[in-house]
Image (cartoon, rainbow over all chains, first blue to last red; front, side, top):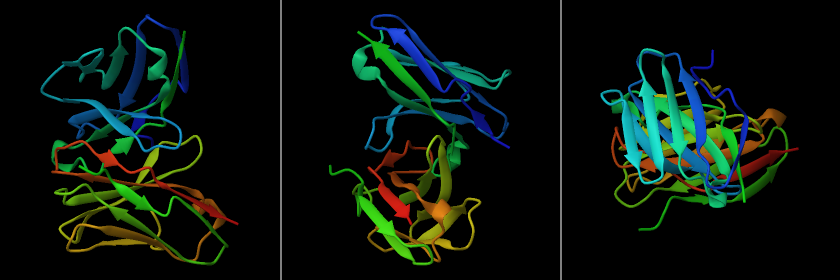
Length: 113
Length: 112
């Protein structure tokens, strides 16, 4: 039973356009959601987070949207840059237990110049 | 601040052997978590330590164990290695229970 799902293994967008990465979860106990970015041969790097009391959180070019009723979150990157090309992982946890996060399988984003 | 340091970066072991991986968290971080990543898979949670105590445990067999020392450094041990244990093992530290994880670059374990 995969509690966090990223249904698109890969996504390709043109530089300057919007990238939208999606994530679905099933566990109602999750109330803290994060996105991590991973380059080859490196560990994941924290990108942005959102708690269940919000439906949107913005940080520069990155915005995360949370739809609690649909148990769905998405990461928007605007505008996309070639340096954004990486694997993006969605993660979820109870806010008081972020050390035990459940991760999706990742989406490989390719931004073409 | 120095990041999370994992040693060694690469390891090749034979089936049946045991292995110990090491992790030094960011200074001031008391929580250390371990994750396994296999090809095409997301990160699977192994366990979390906080103040030398195992706080959470994932669904891995007892061959996987860990510990945390008083300086927050952590080690992970896998005994009786199997071919399926070949993976990238990632260590992450965090400041508190509701903080993002800071990952090291991982230890790539290959079991032959």
